[in-house]
Length: 228
Image (cartoon, rainbow, N blue to C red; front, side):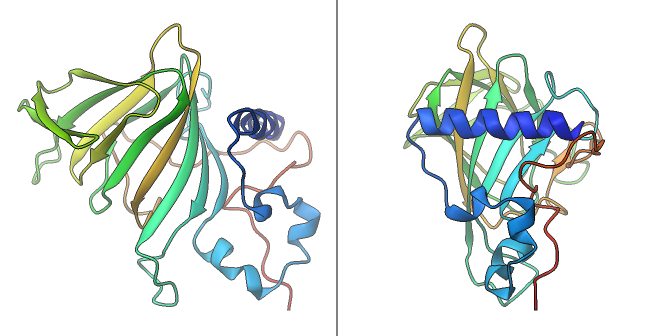
């Protein structure tokens, strides 16, 4: 992705979160210059990849395969210094985009429609040995209700509704045509985007960036070392 595209995505996301009265923690407004002055008091942000995360899954087609994300809080399964056992994200998806089919080996998560349009999910059970898609009914956990759907069937989340997704649940989601965009919450166990994403088709998790203008905000993978 071009840096200018990432900058525009962040500004657009900021504007829509403001419209939905979703206030962000102060560190999300730090400029790249401000980050250079920050010391070890902000190590939790650096070490646990909190912050802005705009991804095209390494394919360069953000308008059709992409996601806007912010990790607001997170623990760290690799570092005993951080004892939080949970994470929280706020995300945005626009009509025409898809978050591609994947599961997590370890993370359980709730995905919540926080406002905007409807989210269309498709889910499959993963074979625990081969990691292929199973053609078996999928148990759905939706806002305290449990029921089954056929593999690959559509489950639609309207604003306020949520799904609980367990490890080895393949899931992809997009926006229902005609409903624009959705603000999406995620409440989960600790998030590890480096080792706990199993995409059905091999994909990258983070974009390759073409620097065509200075960054407006740093992404969660770009923080400079702490100032001593």
